Length: 92
Image 1 (cartoon, helix red, strand yellow):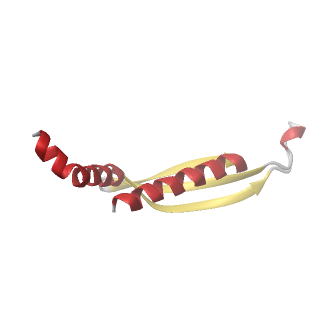
Image 2 (cartoon, rainbow, N blue to C red):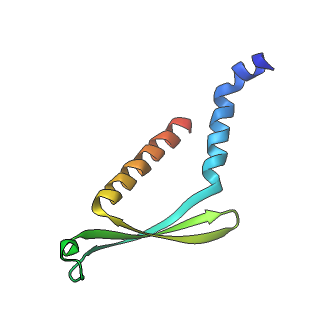
């Protein structure tokens, strides 16, 4: 078993990652950019935000996932998506 694992470790790892990533597949994404122009909290006026709608395939159905992010949160999210893309390209 140990010998087989050593010989097939890379292929098995790629297969496991591919199957894990296919559990929830991003099908589509819509986004809106906004600026807060009125609020009861003066420090929030002028804040930039993004509203995202992600369409995720889960098995045979799709689900809409909604998110509202500040600009720094969006840049962090974008960075994580770029890291995920790079990881997937490594295993394909």
